[in-house]
Image (cartoon, rainbow, N blue to C red; front, side, top):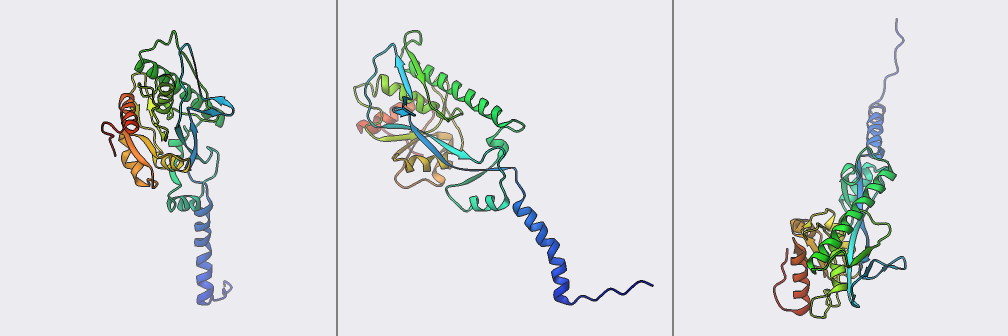
Length: 266
């Protein structure tokens, strides 16, 4: 004969049933998830200095003194080894200065931190090479005679290509009539560039617009394909200018500076 088990009262039964459920919820809330939380990152004026050294150095051609700023923009993300919980994800979803992205879309899967850093550095170098080629081609200058060195610490990836290219052009030629491409403004933006001057999409533009406005920009150059994303949480006082090519970007900046010609909008 089996011993009779004590009969549970209704509150006791509910408590006994709730404990496993609470345990499962707690596990879901605090368990690491395969996401990265991103936020507005640093910006850097490519016409100025970074860590005491010029971002753009040119030899073999006469350079001009510039005014205004051309700011490349970045986003910051939780590290590839960082633990992101359900609570972190929920918090980010309710904030305009945070975004949740699949970790594999931010960091290549299966790679160590050092491998990721090496990959991003390689992407940055390719971007700088393409920026130099595109700028010199636009100005009809030979790479055999003009040497361009680009240096920007602690930034990786290809998304600064457009701003590097515009910075080189501004230092060498400005608007073509003695004026600055910036018109004395703080211009920010993002976009890849290839040797032919085609501008490509990059991602994270909604956060980059926030970084740009935070650091004083009033105009933001955005790859045309990403206009919708850029408009989603656009900071007040920041004007979007869509671009698809280097020529179009220069034309837009000259039109803004001189007040002549049309400037596209998203």
